[in-house]
Amino acid sequence: MFKHTNLMFDWRSMGAGAYLPLVVAGFLVLITIANNGEFVYIMTTIEMLFPFFGAWWSVFLLNDTLSESGNEVLFSLPIKRWHLGIVRVLAFFVIYLSLLVLMLLGMGYWIGFDHMLSLGIQLGAQSFFYSGLGFLAMVVTANTGWSLVVVVCYLSLQILTNGQSLSWIDIYLHNSRPIPVQAMSDFLRKTMILGIVLYLNAQYFFSTTTRLK
Amino acid sequence: MQELQISSLNMKYGHFQALHDIDLTIQPGIFGLLGPNGAGKSTLMRILTTLHTAHSGSIRYDNINWEHKHAVRKIIGYLPQKFSLYKHIKVKEALSHLATLKGLTENRDELVQKAIAQVNLLDVQDKRIGQLSGGMIRRVGIAQAILGNPRIIIVDEPTAGLDPEERIRLRVILQTLSSSSIVIISSHIVEDIETICEKAAIMYKGKILETGSIEDLKQTANGVIWSIVLEKEQFLTSQDQFKVIHQQTQNGKVKIRVMSHGAPTETALQEEPSLEDAYFHFMQKVER
Image (spheres, each protein chain N blue to C red):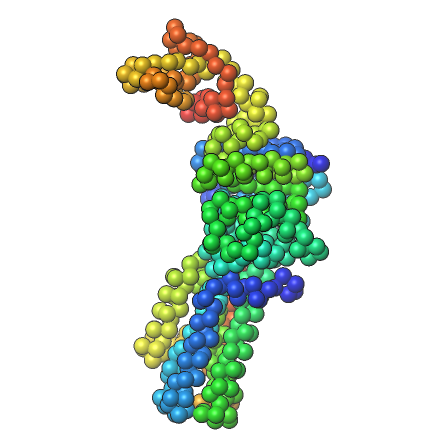
């Protein structure tokens, strides 16, 4: 299944932009340190920024595959489309989860290690949703700029209306401190289902598109 | 080597019939698809590369049927008109990655080096693709298409946007490749087809108007091509009288090449037709 996967190649093909989520994770650790781990000051920023950048690699990973002239070559190779699409995006989502773990470890001393699991599950689920949203936006628009506009619009809508507008697609908890894992089951169910729907639709369009360059 | 057999191929985009009953037999060597924009060349190329599926008809090569896309993809190499993938990646690495995607895992480095050498890019193999000139990027495109010696190589508008030196270089590369594969090129540049192809088909509005060897195609315009030398002023006042195919200024005079079923002037000389003449002749017939 992974014989055609070369994550290092995919990473390098994204250019310098690939490093931005690392910078953001580092920035969030610094914000946490600067605020001495006080959730009330940092939680909104973390919830707003970290999941959002879950879409970043989905979008830029597919830049060559969907936006660049000559991408027809990739679709004429003896390789299944689900491998060019969903497998690579999911692989980078797993890397993003690793970044989440590293970020939480970096914050652990200040926020308390007992909150890490709850925060990790919340941010991980939200990042999964964003990763799927970035994937779908990229497949539909075939343009990195427009895909980021779609993702920013979703973020703005939910943050600015505090989840009141189109609440059925709101994946934010808008919490100012970590929520016990047991209390997150509805949130997790909804966020994961929405994420899976995004992924499946994105892959369906990816598999059937003939709009190549 | 085997032939590529295309039979009764039809393709529609909504109500628009892009290809009408295309029948072609393509033998080893270089085969050209010539036609104006919108003739259906790119649609045919995309069907051959399995990017599109024809609505009816069949394509076969050896025992491979185009209904089995995965099997087809193992025997084709494709270079689209524009190729600008992997700008941040070095030439050698990009080709090595594409070789992996093609399923070429054995002797991969050797195959990549061979392809790089064939297109004369050894000096820049460690440069990023984004740092190369347009002609060199085109050659990277050719290199990826020939990785693993595919039995059918499909090249769309091979020389579009290239300077004269790169054009010549690319034509030589394509001719070399044709010794071991079927090479199909699509172009609206008649010179490309005339210079490098052994056989060609002229397409117009989704149909094949004529197919055959370049010499046979040229002969379809036999007896209707003339040249006339005119003074400049004379040319400016009388050019609407002639169907001018080509004009050239010589020592202050204008030599024109015209199409006419009889001698257009008393001083006109009959000329051997070129492929461009034959192409012009076909276009005149269908647009009449």
